Image (cartoon, rainbow, N blue to C red; front, top):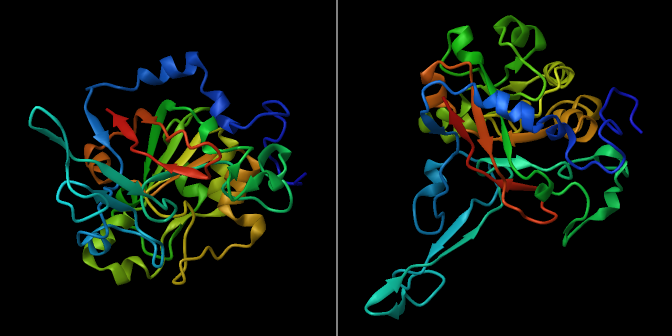
Length: 303
Protein backbone atom coordinates (compact mmCIF):
# COMPACT_ATOMS: atom_id res chain seq x y z
CA UNK A 1 0.00 0.00 0.00
CA UNK A 2 1.36 3.43 -0.88
CA UNK A 3 1.97 5.93 1.92
CA UNK A 4 0.75 9.02 0.06
CA UNK A 5 -2.97 9.91 0.31
CA UNK A 6 -4.96 7.79 -2.13
CA UNK A 7 -8.39 6.36 -2.92
CA UNK A 8 -7.55 2.69 -2.41
CA UNK A 9 -10.48 1.03 -0.72
CA UNK A 10 -12.63 4.16 -0.81
CA UNK A 11 -15.13 2.67 -3.28
CA UNK A 12 -14.82 -0.90 -2.04
CA UNK A 13 -12.11 -3.58 -2.25
CA UNK A 14 -13.14 -4.73 -5.73
CA UNK A 15 -13.50 -1.30 -7.31
CA UNK A 16 -12.04 -0.83 -10.82
CA UNK A 17 -13.58 2.55 -11.74
CA UNK A 18 -12.00 4.94 -9.27
CA UNK A 19 -13.45 8.43 -9.08
CA UNK A 20 -15.86 7.69 -11.92
CA UNK A 21 -17.96 6.27 -9.06
CA UNK A 22 -18.66 9.89 -8.12
CA UNK A 23 -20.76 10.27 -11.28
CA UNK A 24 -24.05 9.14 -9.78
CA UNK A 25 -27.29 9.57 -11.76
CA UNK A 26 -28.09 12.59 -9.60
CA UNK A 27 -24.71 14.19 -10.37
CA UNK A 28 -25.10 13.48 -14.10
CA UNK A 29 -28.49 15.20 -14.15
CA UNK A 30 -26.94 18.15 -12.34
CA UNK A 31 -24.09 18.25 -14.88
CA UNK A 32 -26.55 18.45 -17.79
CA UNK A 33 -27.65 21.83 -16.48
CA UNK A 34 -24.25 23.21 -17.55
CA UNK A 35 -25.44 23.31 -21.18
CA UNK A 36 -26.76 26.73 -22.19
CA UNK A 37 -26.77 27.00 -26.00
CA UNK A 38 -26.78 23.35 -27.12
CA UNK A 39 -23.75 23.88 -29.39
CA UNK A 40 -21.64 20.70 -29.62
CA UNK A 41 -17.86 20.81 -30.10
CA UNK A 42 -15.63 17.83 -30.77
CA UNK A 43 -12.47 17.91 -28.66
CA UNK A 44 -10.65 15.19 -30.62
CA UNK A 45 -7.67 15.17 -32.94
CA UNK A 46 -8.36 13.71 -36.40
CA UNK A 47 -7.23 10.19 -37.29
CA UNK A 48 -5.70 10.12 -40.76
CA UNK A 49 -4.41 7.14 -42.74
CA UNK A 50 -0.67 7.38 -42.27
CA UNK A 51 0.08 4.94 -45.11
CA UNK A 52 -1.85 6.80 -47.79
CA UNK A 53 -1.69 10.48 -46.84
CA UNK A 54 0.73 13.06 -45.45
CA UNK A 55 -0.59 12.34 -41.93
CA UNK A 56 2.87 12.16 -40.29
CA UNK A 57 3.37 15.81 -41.22
CA UNK A 58 -0.12 17.02 -40.29
CA UNK A 59 -1.12 15.32 -37.01
CA UNK A 60 0.62 16.05 -33.68
CA UNK A 61 2.18 12.95 -32.11
CA UNK A 62 5.13 11.87 -30.02
CA UNK A 63 8.25 11.08 -32.02
CA UNK A 64 8.81 7.40 -32.67
CA UNK A 65 5.25 6.33 -31.87
CA UNK A 66 3.40 4.43 -34.63
CA UNK A 67 0.61 6.58 -35.98
CA UNK A 68 -2.89 5.13 -36.44
CA UNK A 69 -3.18 3.20 -39.70
CA UNK A 70 -6.45 3.65 -41.60
CA UNK A 71 -6.98 1.39 -44.60
CA UNK A 72 -9.80 1.57 -47.15
CA UNK A 73 -10.98 -1.09 -49.58
CA UNK A 74 -12.60 1.21 -52.10
CA UNK A 75 -9.90 1.23 -54.81
CA UNK A 76 -8.05 -2.04 -54.22
CA UNK A 77 -4.93 -0.16 -53.14
CA UNK A 78 -5.00 -1.09 -49.50
CA UNK A 79 -6.08 -4.08 -47.44
CA UNK A 80 -8.77 -5.60 -49.72
CA UNK A 81 -9.28 -6.16 -53.42
CA UNK A 82 -11.57 -3.25 -54.11
CA UNK A 83 -15.05 -2.34 -53.02
CA UNK A 84 -17.19 -5.43 -52.78
CA UNK A 85 -20.53 -5.81 -54.60
CA UNK A 86 -23.61 -6.35 -52.44
CA UNK A 87 -26.21 -6.78 -55.15
CA UNK A 88 -28.49 -4.52 -57.23
CA UNK A 89 -25.48 -2.53 -58.44
CA UNK A 90 -24.53 -1.40 -54.93
CA UNK A 91 -20.98 -1.52 -53.67
CA UNK A 92 -19.62 -1.12 -50.14
CA UNK A 93 -16.29 0.37 -49.03
CA UNK A 94 -14.83 -1.06 -45.82
CA UNK A 95 -12.43 0.35 -43.24
CA UNK A 96 -9.67 -1.25 -41.19
CA UNK A 97 -8.09 0.71 -38.36
CA UNK A 98 -4.95 -0.11 -36.39
CA UNK A 99 -4.40 2.27 -33.49
CA UNK A 100 -1.58 2.57 -31.00
CA UNK A 101 -3.32 5.44 -29.25
CA UNK A 102 -0.93 6.42 -26.44
CA UNK A 103 0.97 9.43 -27.73
CA UNK A 104 -0.60 9.43 -31.19
CA UNK A 105 -4.22 10.52 -30.95
CA UNK A 106 -6.96 11.60 -28.53
CA UNK A 107 -7.43 8.81 -26.01
CA UNK A 108 -8.35 7.82 -22.45
CA UNK A 109 -5.95 5.96 -20.17
CA UNK A 110 -7.30 3.02 -18.20
CA UNK A 111 -6.36 2.48 -14.56
CA UNK A 112 -4.17 -0.46 -15.65
CA UNK A 113 -2.06 1.78 -17.90
CA UNK A 114 0.64 2.56 -15.33
CA UNK A 115 1.61 1.35 -11.89
CA UNK A 116 4.53 0.98 -9.51
CA UNK A 117 5.58 -2.18 -7.69
CA UNK A 118 3.31 -5.23 -7.83
CA UNK A 119 -0.09 -3.58 -7.49
CA UNK A 120 -2.43 -1.63 -9.73
CA UNK A 121 -4.90 0.93 -8.40
CA UNK A 122 -6.85 -0.34 -5.37
CA UNK A 123 -4.30 -3.13 -4.71
CA UNK A 124 -5.34 -5.22 -7.72
CA UNK A 125 -2.41 -7.48 -8.68
CA UNK A 126 -0.28 -6.08 -11.49
CA UNK A 127 0.35 -9.66 -12.62
CA UNK A 128 -3.17 -9.55 -14.07
CA UNK A 129 -1.88 -7.27 -16.86
CA UNK A 130 -0.71 -9.63 -19.60
CA UNK A 131 -0.09 -9.55 -23.35
CA UNK A 132 -3.65 -10.79 -23.94
CA UNK A 133 -5.13 -7.94 -21.89
CA UNK A 134 -5.62 -6.79 -18.31
CA UNK A 135 -8.11 -8.74 -16.25
CA UNK A 136 -8.23 -5.90 -13.71
CA UNK A 137 -8.85 -2.16 -14.26
CA UNK A 138 -9.21 -2.38 -18.06
CA UNK A 139 -10.78 0.40 -20.09
CA UNK A 140 -14.06 -1.54 -20.44
CA UNK A 141 -14.91 -0.66 -16.84
CA UNK A 142 -15.28 3.03 -17.73
CA UNK A 143 -18.56 2.72 -19.63
CA UNK A 144 -19.32 6.35 -20.45
CA UNK A 145 -18.50 9.68 -18.88
CA UNK A 146 -21.16 12.39 -18.67
CA UNK A 147 -20.07 15.13 -16.30
CA UNK A 148 -19.63 18.83 -15.83
CA UNK A 149 -16.48 19.90 -17.63
CA UNK A 150 -14.42 22.78 -16.24
CA UNK A 151 -11.88 24.45 -18.53
CA UNK A 152 -8.61 25.77 -17.14
CA UNK A 153 -7.51 27.86 -20.13
CA UNK A 154 -4.03 28.56 -18.79
CA UNK A 155 -2.44 30.38 -21.77
CA UNK A 156 -5.46 32.65 -22.23
CA UNK A 157 -5.33 33.49 -18.52
CA UNK A 158 -1.66 34.42 -18.91
CA UNK A 159 -2.17 36.33 -22.17
CA UNK A 160 -0.32 33.76 -24.30
CA UNK A 161 -1.15 31.74 -27.42
CA UNK A 162 0.42 28.67 -25.79
CA UNK A 163 2.54 27.88 -22.77
CA UNK A 164 6.33 27.61 -23.18
CA UNK A 165 7.68 24.08 -23.49
CA UNK A 166 9.24 24.13 -20.03
CA UNK A 167 6.21 25.60 -18.23
CA UNK A 168 4.72 23.59 -15.38
CA UNK A 169 1.29 24.67 -14.17
CA UNK A 170 1.34 24.99 -10.38
CA UNK A 171 -1.68 24.57 -8.07
CA UNK A 172 -1.54 28.26 -7.11
CA UNK A 173 -2.27 29.19 -10.72
CA UNK A 174 -5.23 26.79 -10.92
CA UNK A 175 -6.53 28.31 -7.69
CA UNK A 176 -6.04 31.81 -9.06
CA UNK A 177 -8.04 31.00 -12.18
CA UNK A 178 -10.91 30.34 -9.82
CA UNK A 179 -13.42 28.05 -11.54
CA UNK A 180 -15.94 26.58 -9.15
CA UNK A 181 -14.53 23.05 -9.17
CA UNK A 182 -16.93 20.47 -7.69
CA UNK A 183 -16.60 16.75 -6.88
CA UNK A 184 -17.11 14.65 -10.00
CA UNK A 185 -16.12 17.41 -12.43
CA UNK A 186 -13.84 16.73 -15.39
CA UNK A 187 -10.89 19.12 -15.16
CA UNK A 188 -9.87 20.13 -18.70
CA UNK A 189 -6.42 21.74 -18.99
CA UNK A 190 -5.47 23.76 -22.06
CA UNK A 191 -1.77 24.40 -22.73
CA UNK A 192 -2.21 25.39 -26.39
CA UNK A 193 0.69 23.10 -27.31
CA UNK A 194 -0.97 21.15 -30.20
CA UNK A 195 -1.16 24.39 -32.21
CA UNK A 196 2.67 24.51 -32.13
CA UNK A 197 2.70 21.54 -34.50
CA UNK A 198 1.37 23.74 -37.30
CA UNK A 199 4.38 25.99 -36.88
CA UNK A 200 7.01 23.26 -36.56
CA UNK A 201 7.02 19.57 -35.59
CA UNK A 202 10.56 20.14 -34.31
CA UNK A 203 9.28 22.78 -31.90
CA UNK A 204 6.47 20.45 -30.82
CA UNK A 205 9.03 17.73 -30.07
CA UNK A 206 11.29 20.10 -28.11
CA UNK A 207 9.31 19.38 -24.92
CA UNK A 208 5.78 19.96 -23.68
CA UNK A 209 4.20 22.10 -20.96
CA UNK A 210 1.90 20.47 -18.46
CA UNK A 211 0.74 20.17 -14.89
CA UNK A 212 3.18 20.00 -12.00
CA UNK A 213 2.93 17.20 -9.46
CA UNK A 214 1.48 19.70 -7.00
CA UNK A 215 -1.26 20.62 -9.46
CA UNK A 216 -2.11 16.94 -9.87
CA UNK A 217 -2.42 16.53 -6.12
CA UNK A 218 -4.55 19.70 -5.96
CA UNK A 219 -6.97 18.29 -8.54
CA UNK A 220 -7.08 14.93 -6.74
CA UNK A 221 -7.90 16.71 -3.50
CA UNK A 222 -10.83 18.39 -5.29
CA UNK A 223 -12.28 14.95 -6.15
CA UNK A 224 -12.37 15.36 -9.93
CA UNK A 225 -13.59 12.33 -11.87
CA UNK A 226 -11.22 12.80 -14.82
CA UNK A 227 -8.22 14.97 -15.69
CA UNK A 228 -8.05 15.82 -19.40
CA UNK A 229 -5.49 17.90 -21.30
CA UNK A 230 -4.38 18.85 -24.78
CA UNK A 231 -0.79 17.72 -24.22
CA UNK A 232 0.51 14.17 -24.55
CA UNK A 233 1.12 13.24 -20.90
CA UNK A 234 -0.93 15.54 -18.59
CA UNK A 235 2.38 16.52 -17.00
CA UNK A 236 5.23 18.16 -18.88
CA UNK A 237 7.80 16.44 -21.08
CA UNK A 238 11.45 17.23 -21.74
CA UNK A 239 13.24 17.27 -25.09
CA UNK A 240 13.52 13.46 -24.92
CA UNK A 241 9.72 13.34 -24.58
CA UNK A 242 9.98 11.95 -21.09
CA UNK A 243 8.69 13.19 -17.75
CA UNK A 244 11.47 14.59 -15.61
CA UNK A 245 9.83 13.88 -12.24
CA UNK A 246 10.73 10.96 -10.00
CA UNK A 247 8.26 8.18 -9.20
CA UNK A 248 6.82 9.97 -6.17
CA UNK A 249 5.86 12.95 -8.34
CA UNK A 250 4.92 11.15 -11.55
CA UNK A 251 1.46 12.42 -12.50
CA UNK A 252 0.27 9.11 -13.92
CA UNK A 253 1.11 7.44 -10.62
CA UNK A 254 -0.47 10.24 -8.59
CA UNK A 255 -3.69 10.28 -10.58
CA UNK A 256 -4.19 6.85 -12.15
CA UNK A 257 -2.44 4.61 -9.66
CA UNK A 258 -3.03 6.29 -6.32
CA UNK A 259 -6.33 8.12 -6.81
CA UNK A 260 -8.09 6.13 -9.53
CA UNK A 261 -8.55 9.22 -11.69
CA UNK A 262 -8.74 8.39 -15.39
CA UNK A 263 -6.72 10.56 -17.77
CA UNK A 264 -7.61 11.87 -21.22
CA UNK A 265 -4.74 13.14 -23.37
CA UNK A 266 -4.14 14.89 -26.69
CA UNK A 267 -7.37 16.86 -26.82
CA UNK A 268 -7.96 19.66 -29.34
CA UNK A 269 -9.22 22.63 -27.30
CA UNK A 270 -8.82 25.64 -29.60
CA UNK A 271 -12.51 26.01 -30.50
CA UNK A 272 -13.51 25.49 -26.88
CA UNK A 273 -11.05 28.20 -25.86
CA UNK A 274 -12.47 30.56 -28.48
CA UNK A 275 -15.97 29.96 -27.09
CA UNK A 276 -14.78 31.37 -23.74
CA UNK A 277 -16.88 28.93 -21.73
CA UNK A 278 -15.55 27.92 -18.33
CA UNK A 279 -18.07 25.13 -17.73
CA UNK A 280 -20.01 22.86 -20.06
CA UNK A 281 -21.30 19.30 -20.35
CA UNK A 282 -18.44 16.88 -21.01
CA UNK A 283 -19.25 13.57 -22.75
CA UNK A 284 -16.81 10.78 -23.60
CA UNK A 285 -17.03 7.02 -24.10
CA UNK A 286 -14.07 4.71 -24.78
CA UNK A 287 -14.42 1.62 -26.92
CA UNK A 288 -15.24 -1.48 -24.88
CA UNK A 289 -11.82 -3.04 -25.39
CA UNK A 290 -11.75 -5.84 -22.84
CA UNK A 291 -8.50 -5.60 -20.89
CA UNK A 292 -7.39 -2.52 -22.80
CA UNK A 293 -4.91 -0.06 -21.28
CA UNK A 294 -6.80 2.74 -23.00
CA UNK A 295 -8.95 3.65 -25.97
CA UNK A 296 -9.24 6.34 -28.63
CA UNK A 297 -12.20 8.59 -27.93
CA UNK A 298 -14.05 11.55 -29.43
CA UNK A 299 -14.89 13.73 -26.40
CA UNK A 300 -17.68 16.27 -26.79
CA UNK A 301 -18.28 19.60 -25.12
CA UNK A 302 -21.94 20.63 -25.07
CA UNK A 303 -22.05 24.38 -24.49
